[in-house]
Amino acid sequence: MHPTSNKGFTLLELLVVITLLAFMSTLVGVNLGGGDRADLESIARTLVTDLRYVRSKAMVGNADTALVVDLTDGIYYSNAADFDRALPESIAVELTVDLRDIDGRRGRILFYPDGSSSGGSVRLSRNGRSVEVTTAWLNGYVSMQE
Image (cartoon, rainbow, N blue to C red; front, side, top):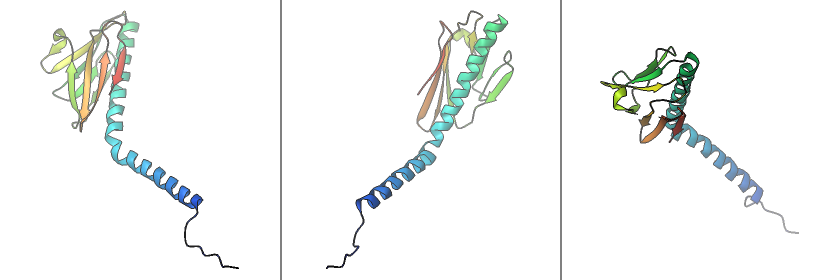
């Protein structure tokens, strides 16, 4: 009889180690590279929610209601919906609205009682990544795209 020697690893041991390494690298990738993106998307989702809320206030209150974006102070607000939110200084904000809805470095997206809007978009950017929040003029639908 020959004595058995244990000079290597079994296939099962190798598969377990590779699986653990893959899982750990996925976690590290999320924590290191995904933070900026997740933060930017979180801010954009909040903006989407706020725009939809302003639209509903216009419809329920049967009055024109606006969300105003102030590029100088880096905030957006709505007096009718009773909120204002500061945007982080590290985020670049681009606003695209109708010329009638611009006052200096402030612009607004206006919602009407029938649910439609003046339309427009807000692009949030940081570190080469950007998210655009768009409001359709015809039906006031608010969406977010990367």
